[in-house]
Image (tube, rainbow, N blue to C red; front, side):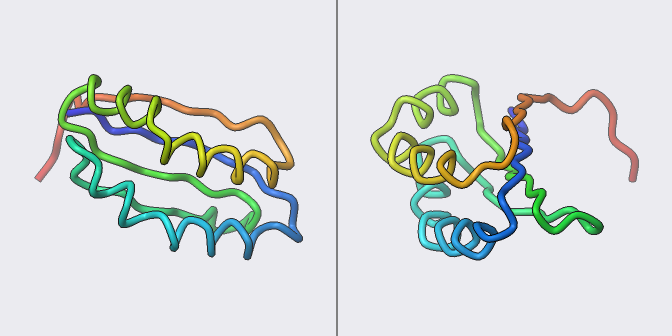
Length: 98
């Protein structure tokens, strides 16, 4: 299982546009083969910083999404709204607590 985190900082005037874009595409992303969860998080203090959090069964499914027409469409629209370079991490669980 891959947990993907992407940090994005938007221009203040672009925040609502990004949220609308995410809401319009989240179900399509979640329906991609191998994806079991997609969510959008917003920084509690800086409202221009967002994180997407997604769960992928295997890295091959994440890579297939990243090469899809859907990703290319969403990413082109999203990156036009950035105020800073995005950061991304693919992670795996090492330890859990109850």
